[in-house]
Length: 64
Image 1 (cartoon, rainbow, N blue to C red):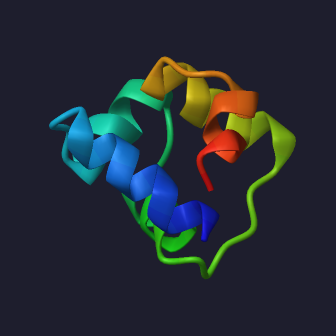
Image 2: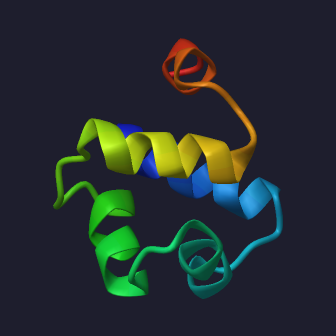
């Protein structure tokens, strides 16, 4: 699941949800719904997430 994968990558980078959400300009509760799979991700949001994780969109999906 994409949301869980985003969460794993964030944790590997030793960032809390709050830290990561602030870094990418997103509300923490919105990030939480993405990571739990309860929220679909728009292209714009996905771009902010991968930029914050310092990976590409291709890299994100390659490891799913």
